[in-house]
Length: 166
Image (tube, rainbow, N blue to C red; front, side):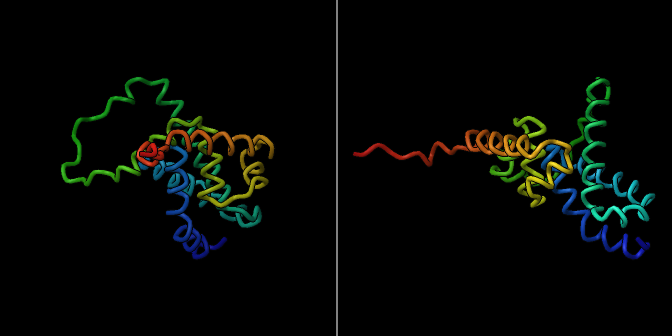
């Protein structure tokens, strides 16, 4: 992959990968960081990426592994959780539907959240997800069914239930 090809690939894929990792991790800044770090690693092996044939899947997998490693590190280090109280002053509040969806996704087990992201946001087939995650196709299908069921339950709108007949 030449420098120009890599730059074009980066321009086309960075936003999509950041969005996918955001859904997987539930943290936009973390997603941006791990995607950038994965692209740095990809840059160093760009000649081999072309031969592998699926650079986006490789970067997504590396970014996911980086996110997991960072989570483990923070979990072991209590000091890393202390954040400054300097919040941005003029930030618009998030859309309530967005907050509800992100909250529901965060409640899912990590593997279900990752599988749903790969299937619905990355538009990967069950077989492609199995290849990328190392899980069997039947396990992927199970994660999809359980994840959809859990999301449907968490995202129920009580206002949409039928009113009793009068």
